[in-house]
Length: 133
Length: 74
Image 1 (cartoon, each protein chain N blue to C red):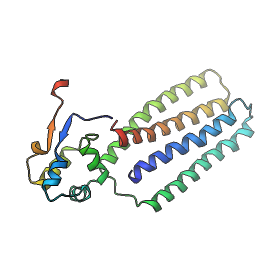
Image 2: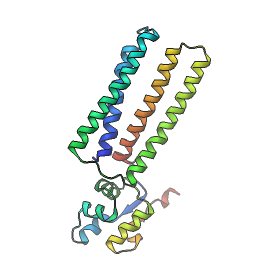
Image 3: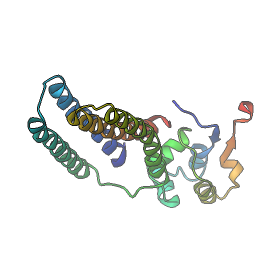
Image 4: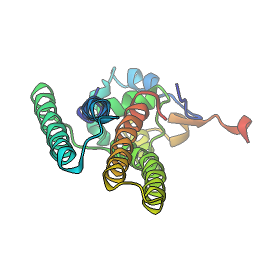
């Protein structure tokens, strides 16, 4: 596994675990906006810290190589798949906004679509590296 | 596994050229070893430029290294 392959796998796993835990705790908790905002900021910071630490550990274990054409193809493949998820999420958030949904629910839907798109982006890269699609 | 319709003889050519390692070939064509492995296993189709560079390393025409195997899908 190259550094970039491990990086994509580590990021996909981190996003899934951190935001999955957050969603599990926040789902149905009936939080007010004031209660939810620190949690949302906290989960974004926690995810960023875990990803940075994971990448430092990966870079110590194996020095990153210069990206070649396959790395670029994997990145484009991931971005293309993530775009569909993000677009679907954007339409969903727009629909929620038009339905007078509470602001916190709209914010959570927006966060979910961004996180899902990122998970799909990195998971697609792993699939491309491992199996070629 | 997602196999590309392009077959190649890189593995054979490496052994015919002094048992060249995948890393040595990767260094000469400017790719990573993992990409050479993926090309050899048919998991990745290289760009035309990379394909010409690989053929150039072995000193053979492109069609000796790569063969298109997708006619039956047309």
